[in-house]
Image (cartoon, rainbow, N blue to C red; front, side, top):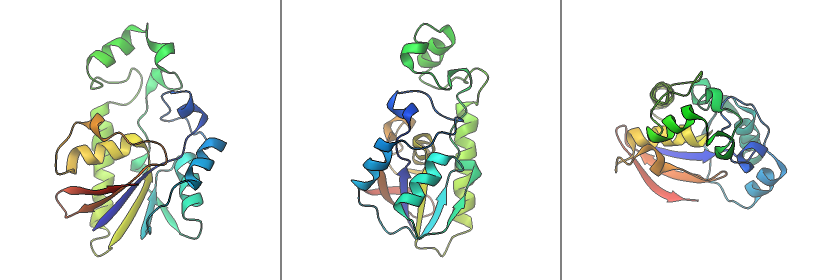
Length: 186
């Protein structure tokens, strides 16, 4: 099965390098313009995160396609770090602890990175089980969502952060039911 992973277009928060998880921002003008610079593959069955930035991205790329909202693909809740960037957080001892843990400790008053990854993988497997005869699936989601799925299933078993993808980026992959092979990056 071919699976296309597309990260949503930029928001103002993304441009300011802020942690934007549960903040439901629209894509910005730069993000909309950047989408027009890319060519995206045929979508097949389309799934999106419930966040506005993903829905808007899908509607721009695939204006004539129906999509299904997949609630489990929403971005991580960054808790007390939400809406802030590194400069605003660099002196925060909780942020320093999170950085020192290599991003593995829980976000204060937010979601556990482990629970986030489990939620995303669970949603992914539900979609796969419901589409065993579907040749192409496209997911318009968040960078963290893509990283969580690839960390679990990509054939080279890279670290979570090794699968970072830019806004508007697309990975065309093949999933054999056990592992994902990255075919190309658009």
